[in-house]
Image (cartoon, one colour):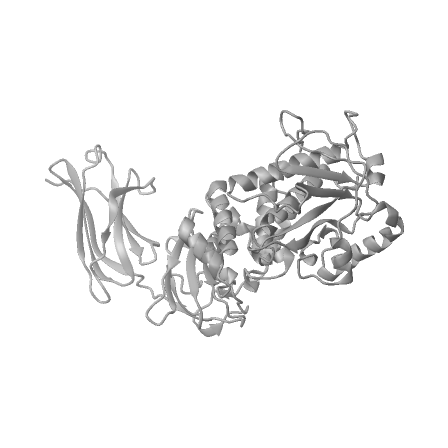
Length: 543
């Protein structure tokens, strides 16, 4: 990965190379070991050794270690090379300034130039998302300190003081610029920390489950995906039952999958902006979860539960199965069994459903979620490998009833999501039984006859129908396909339990008549939109 150096024409920057000693004033050189000890202590306490330790340096952090790291390093001998708005000032530790590369011999360490460039890119991306730059601490500059933190941490943002009347605060960023850090890793950390300062200006006490993925999303937009971002997503995916509102920094960072599941970076940018602006004006009596969910629904028409299900569907469809499932259903019947994993607020439960080898016509599921607000979707993989995601509505008892016909499908997952503020984990109950050998319908007749027009009339009748939404007709030149749909919309199903219906559809597609041979078939669509394909017939001569 390469980055352009700043220049007066490409990036009007105020870039200062200043001398600091271990993050403390030059006169306090003896305190450097205490600084590094405080850094290591906080990193160990948070389980963030070798990572971003910003979660340990919030406004409310009151430990002696936090106070020491929150003290702004004192700098001297700054060198101005250009001017920009907002002003960026990058400070380099003197020991680093002696060993960091300066390829063009302009007196500015390459890492300092890279930090300035990445910081400006980050601010530009945030600005395009409708987010204001970080708050000014009074000197009109955004300060980034490049220190050698060894293997203790990759960097952090230190928030110093809240600024009224909103929820914002200002601070500074410290980045590990050790030569052992690669340029891509260094650039990624600069982007994340600058993004943190942008978000701190909006709500300095924003919940980690929204702050961490927001900063990671901006980071990947600036410096590209990384192994770190993939690991965060994997950690989140392997603990879906923990819930969106986790305070664990690594799991919270994995919530970036919600933004990645959107149809475009523009949509994700709009979601980011809507969520943060809603937090800034949030009613104190309304939880951040409800506030952000309402903002996303109003802005984009999708809520957090929808995004969570989309993200899960993307993972499953690409073959990335979670380490733990909330349930695994195959042998039937299953009566009143609780899910194996308790689901907290904002949790995702994944139930895997497979055909029973002895009863493979279909599976009927009933899920009893219990109290709270729940949402479900069904993800099915067809026989040809394609995937279909469809929402599932609750019945009158607020339970979820599903019918999965296995004729056209080989695998299914039920995605159950919970959105409420109750901290108590819940184990939804599941009941499953075979759908029966009859399936959702029984055909009593099927024919395709040439008519005057020219046209082909497809006629069929059912003996009974249950859980059927409608019918579609498909045409093919051979019994094996390829099949194409006839007609723009499905025909509504007219039958019911113990009662069938009769149907007729004219195919006036140019070339449909006279092409020999020609085949038609009917496909029943369940109330969930799943397919149940019937037999095919050849066109018979007619009028």
